[in-house]
Length: 278
Ligand SMILES: C[S@@+](CC[C@H](N)C(=O)[O-])C[C@H]1O[C@@H](n2cnc3c(N)ncnc32)[C@H](O)[C@@H]1O
Image 1 (cartoon, protein in one colour):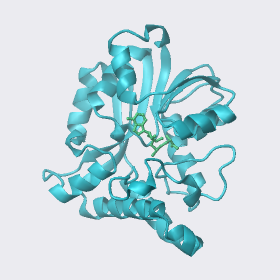
Image 2 (cartoon, rainbow, N blue to C red):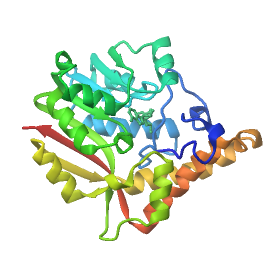
Image 3 (cartoon, rainbow, N blue to C red):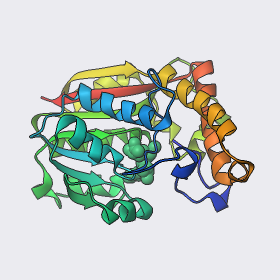
């Protein structure tokens, strides 16, 4: 979730990963991170993704689909930590495709170059029937960008084998009072549609209606949003003036500010969701 180019058109729609980490070999991460056991950005990103993979109990013989894979750092993690050898990955940003294709992870079978929404439509129209049969579908720190959670669940239900698992991160409403108009506007700038926010009970009910069971929601607000805000303060000290004057850095700072605001006001929760198909 990074505030985007409407405020600063020169920023572009991507995330300048070099401002977040000094090393990005073999691949950069671009997520908010789980900061419960580290102060290092790459390690925090790794932790956020690892915890999702761990909760889904990924296994070497799983066939996996990763949605919004960014630069493909997760694909390498699924292989290294869980031995997963067959993955398809979806991402719409060209610079990410170019990066992945310049040195593809050994477990990458197919790169789906489209927006998640278009992919879901192709699933509903039966165009990608042959690709069904995944054991697990993961989406690290990105599902809140998609137009519709309902479509994510519906498409995943079609794509997963019986007993298949899904895991993703999301924002959930945490109070009766929905976030005010100006906060909604800020989320819009971050390409997050706040009309999609629902509370935990509604989220679980919707997943169950789409034939998912064992739906579990884990609150990670403090270790993700609080951790990222503290990291951005520390990183600000490490960066030179030239980097800090870049609009891309202001975008990152604004994102950290928004995350911290959400944390302090308590309107929203950042959650990890996992479920399996009945
Ligand atoms: C916070 S980044 C996470 C990337 C990666 N999962 C990681 O952990 O490094 C969010 C990703 O979602 C992708 N994304 C945003 N909206 C999308 C959409 N509608 N369809 C597919 N990908 C999308 C972005 O291009 C970006 O790579």
